[in-house]
Image 1 (cartoon, rainbow, N blue to C red):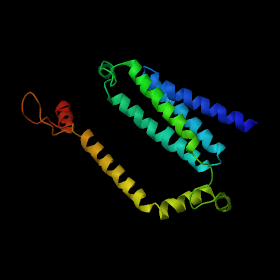
Image 2 (cartoon, rainbow, N blue to C red):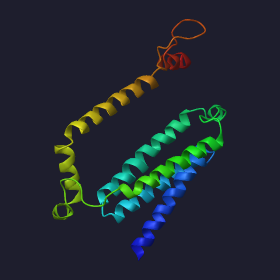
Image 3 (cartoon, rainbow, N blue to C red):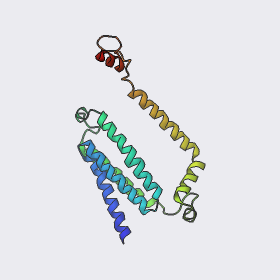
Length: 192
């Protein structure tokens, strides 16, 4: 009985936080709604006895990804961004698209078949552990996609660093056409 109530509590909070994340006007409040959503997703993973995935959900998503969202929010000029018109011209058109997608999802739900899939039946997972089964599957059958994802993330990180470092101390002064002095030379001038 408790497990049923626990599931419905998590499911309700996840749906409500998802709606709040896309409907709140303040982006920081939206990020906080996503934080609550991530913690309740971890609660659902605990219900499925996937403790490793619950820990990864909290550490990676609630910890790292949400901090990244906050950094992006602080770097973007929010006052200017809020004046931009919406992507969808009418509110009712967007709501109609959302209702249509929800209807298609509900129409497709009965076609899903329950049962065990993959090379790890539940008896094999109970003998080892979910973390070991995930690691074995990830580093044997899916090693190449795992490495490709790692290289893509590395390229994205390097690209982000290149884009963020455009304000270095050898940047040309826009008004005078000469190089700006570095911060260390400015400190030396002030000290003298």
